[in-house]
Image (tube, rainbow, N blue to C red; front, side, top):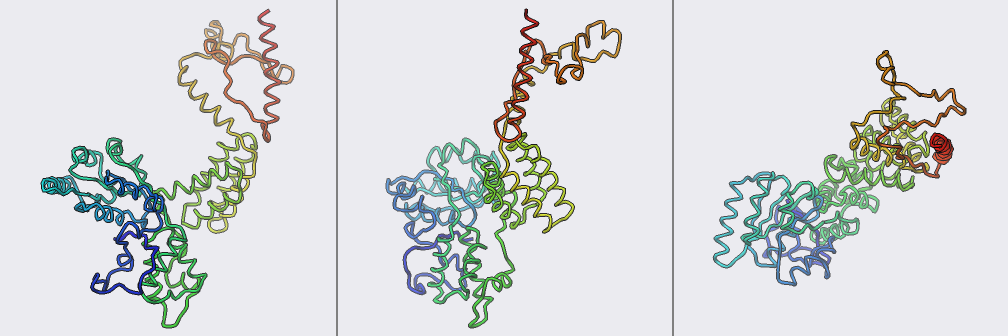
Length: 448
């Protein structure tokens, strides 16, 4: 499949047949750039001051991992780098290749190197190789047999060996913006010698459908040309009807899923209800499981709001149950209400921080027995051993507080929870401070 960016330079309506036989080739393939300078959409790499531009200007090319979503030009960049450096270009896909295929490619590269020409090996979907297969690249990278350019849609930090990552530079490719997608459409119209049969609203809708994918926007454009009758001009509703497509859909196992839930969580934590609603609606529109979103909202309630607003957890649980009861689309409003409530609530991670500190302390001191006075003594032997001796029933004390110490004696008193001055935690903090004063007074008396 073709990856592409398009060209920022004006072109004649059609390329001459002598240049290439374009008949029957997909539009995406026909628009593939022929030089690095023609690439648009990744200026941080291919612009006049881009990383790849600088690398080529230095006369050297090292191994690279190109990380980016589909349709951002990974294959195209690999081909252009080989052309610019006069390297032999070899391409394999990790989906269809194994160790035997790699050995053949490596041997061909060794023979080619003896004749004075180096090899650029492009590995598509490199994250699909297992650890042992990835390790097989290490010797040929170290001795310069090949320059590796790997392409992946997955986070290399999680999917590639540390040893392989240490020998290659990771370059991030960004999704196309609407502006760069619009340039692709303009170039496609010049190549085709005709305008797209779309009004302004339909054109914007087509750009949104592509969701940052350059290949997708040209495929959709081809479908629009095929679907429109002679002289017909499609509006947004007609375009969606003929294409049978309405919203960008992301793979729930891919980075898009995690990026959007991260954006929703951080918008809530940052007290921005409008941004929280935007990301919630994006995920719902893309087909995300609403109950997954409900569970994540519950997590946000206990992690970022906590006891600053104890009702946050109640609201989120109720929203999750409401969706489970109402279904879609009616139940989605309950999730929206919960997201706005969380974003608008006072924030505190004091319980979250206290919990993590208590977990660490419990693991480090898990063998310490509780003090005897807080242990039950159901048998005479246990009473004789002092279990329960000296325990004071708090409800019998003024203010229902005795001020006793409940930590293991060898550990001593610990403080994990530090309430904030926000929301309901302000009152909790005052109450705890009052009790601490009584506890200190009791300790002072016992020390006299």
